[in-house]
Image (cartoon, rainbow over all chains, first blue to last red; front, side):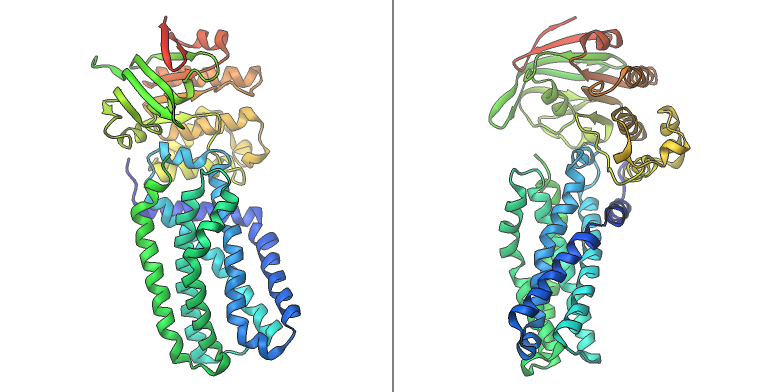
Length: 229
Length: 216
């Protein structure tokens, strides 16, 4: 009765997204939270030049803060009534679970980042031209994939642990630091902040792609062991 | 080991959080039996069920379930056993039909099997479309059992299946367990509801401090 990874992944992703659409945690809690972070920075810095210069970093910082909530939420759904245990007992391929949960997290991150970048355009008055937009979209896709993979991996690792609410940010923050740095640099190039060119952003996107590939592969290979007792 | 033996444990030891939760269990369960596990809290009933499901490593002794040696390989047995523990393994935001459909998809059951499982659990159209978070404890248990049925488990491991249910819900659980055994499954039930579970079971096994004290 072994099922293909892709079929399990589709079922898990569809289930997670359906649960999210009904519970509205992203729209009612995560989006307002990240929006507040953006607004507070706008008031705190209160200088258009400074805000335009640091807009990319602020967007990715708000994304990382929100990532912790999203990851905890996505695994709370599995552990609340013992579903993760049931999936393990049923012998469901853990690679399918990993891919499915990563895809659902990726979609939620994309929705969140779209709103955050729109907020940056409105609040911080940043501009992006055609070539910058291509770089920005590629950067968002690669960074989101990396964050989704690493978030799912560490979410699985801490799902059964005591004090997981505090443990997860503690473990996750150092690991996602490269994403914060690379995505910020690439976004600065896309927005031409501080005189950098679009071309200077592509190497950073390359690093983001490598990060996503490494954690995607690492997750596929190790997720099964991580969710074991 | 007898040919029709589904569970064969000899001096099996399992450790949980550094504590020997199973301290040398010897137990044999044959096909189609309904076995009641009884014993005080902390006796090792839940641990034994989890060990049979391949969730708990057996570090010493013999531990065979459905022909798989659990001391060597705990993964292979999982596709063939169904464990219903204190939790139901359901998603509260989804309806009963969506939960059963999800479990059908991830274990490769057909739509017909899904429909049949819901019919067996007397889950009709109106009930099927209610969210699990809105259901009573008994209805949640029925939904969890429907998810167990679609998995075509050969060995059912039920941990306190009557807990939190009213008389009607308990009767339904008993009916479902009897049907499962009649259709070829082997059932091991851990319960504190001794009188009710004894009526259901073909044999009673007493566990004390991680060991089998007697089997009647």
